Amino acid sequence: MKQKNILKLLAGMAGLGIALGAATVHASPEQDQQDLIKYFTTKYPNVKLEDYVYGALAFDPDSKAQYDAIMEFPPFDSQIEEGRKMWETPFKNGKTYADCMPNGGKQIAGNYPMFDEAKGKVVTLENVVNDCRVANGEAPFKLSDPKTIGVLSAYMRTLSDGMIMNIKVQSPKAMAAYEDGKKTFYSRKGQRNFACASCHMQNAGNRLRSELVSPVVGQAVHWPGFFIGGDTLVTLQNQYSFCFTMVLRAVPPAEDSTTMNNLEYFHSAMSNGLPMKASVFRR
Amino acid sequence: MRKLHQIATACAISAIMLSGTVLAQAAAPKEETGKDIAFNLSKGNCLACHGMPTVPDAESTGTYGPPLIAMSARYPDKAKLRAQIWDATVANPSTSMIPFGKHGVLTEAEIDKVTDFVYGL
Image (cartoon, rainbow over all chains, first blue to last red; front, side, top):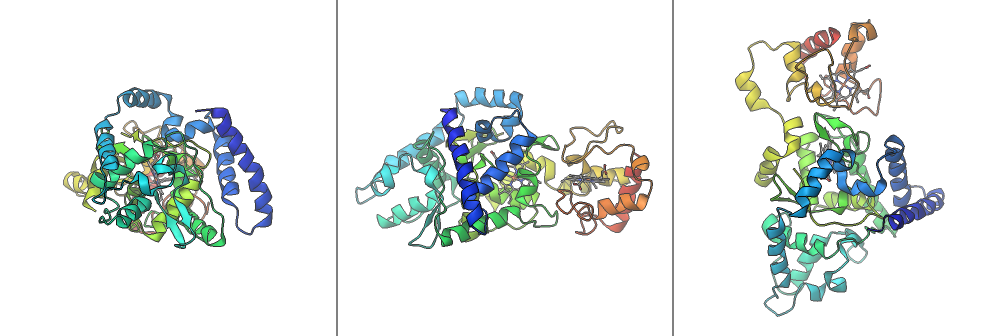
């Protein structure tokens, strides 16, 4: 990846953010992201911004080296292969997924989630897959099913490797969805009184017990992840549910609900300018 | 939900923050000491965030909060120490420490015991 380009892009957004910030009541996504980046890079001047795509590994060279070794022969390759077969298998009507997606499904993942003005809501890449199925007379997938849409989207996202995350928030309605996701990220919930930000903003780079905690910037670019020895597929929204349940001890919103999709919208915008990578290994 | 649970049981985070209820109940002595409560994953779990440099078996501790050491010198007033554990948001509204008393994570009696234990560090 051309790292200089990423930095330039991010620096460019900073300027834009300041200009917009002065004109709008709510901070723009650009400004929000710049504030976070400033917070992290001030605290950890030695961790390069482009390494934030590695999450907690960026703060731990030893674990990163292990990760690199494992990623040379990814343990989840066979699942990506299953996804490729699904992607290439035509629907009953003879059409394919590529036929009904923008740009044949290539280099698009970084545009999602996207605010669909016609629908008046945030749509995820997985929603696009299901819309495509329905439009071609097939039943939609259950969105949290790792065996179907999980592996399919894992393959699909490899078609966007290296694409720069580019979430746009361009209308008042889109802004409202973004603000809603941001609120979910920053509000405290549950018995332990945590917000997502308690860990992934305030304590990024710290250890919770022995676990290093990743910064929110860079978290959204590398899904699904393959956990537990590298063969358990976890989507981004699975991970949200997990943190809601296990660490916040709060009841998670349903996956694909407006709340979750808006959270994914905000959360992905905080990785704008960073390169996509499908998929990664997680312990 | 079942899937989530499967992920949870095997995932690294569960070891840190997941309640250890089953294990704890099986192994817990009748009367828990302040140290037991502080170490218990489903109760104080203080080690998730704090080192305790003077306690040899406080291993793999987290770094969210400062190491708990020389507490009686730093908190001559034990009530202040208890208040910090009961609700850390009073001293710091944006704290990431759990309000153990205010949110009922620990009972009043458990907080008393933990306070005594921490005071001795």
